[in-house]
Image (cartoon, rainbow, N blue to C red; front, side, top):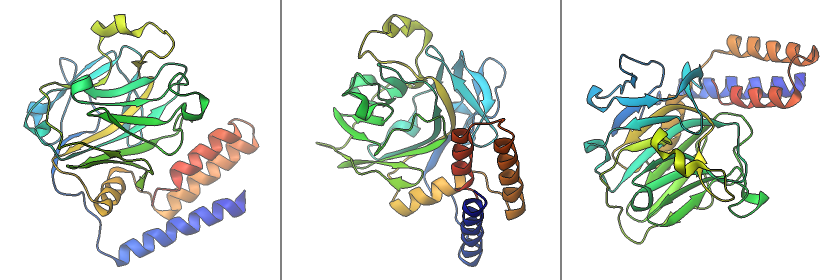
Length: 285
């Protein structure tokens, strides 16, 4: 275990060194909305860092420890409503979010949707979609076309999901890595007049009866939602991912690894939990 930790730490240090020698990364241009989900303001709103006119309405959410500071915990009838506006009126755009899911069964879990069948939806697939092989995979659907994550993400670990939509393709990136199954569009996406709903609103309870194959609300955590008014390139996706995660110096990383090793040796955490936390550390610099 110590050898593995040493290897991870070495890679982190090498990454930090090479980055210091190169030009510092910055968030790509075109960011028109950014929700950190770190605070809730009067009236049940969470602020948009770019434009307060785009503040999001929350319902039934709870605060939790996030990928970066705080996050919102969602249950089947929790929702975050991002109001429709100019930031959505694009045929080319990019959506980015950190997610962590802890419950997937037969039914698929809606993470967010805008305009439903006329717009687009991101969900975690349940086993009723096409059996156990796809359970836990991400599926983004737009214009009836779908793109998928390469593997399940329902292991209670944090993942960064970026969806880049241009005139012909939808490309999904997980933790900055391009997934193998893009979606090919018939024509450029036409924006729909609808709010972006993260989760499912209370008034949609009737659609949440747990019948086989029926979609229900997301159960998990969401953090750092960003909207760009253009399709990001692969390098820009890598930059956006890098800029959206917390960064630690080597001393802080060593301390976190020692704490995890100690907790595992004392049998206060499981091996799976230990592995997940090391995975999260492996992308921090």
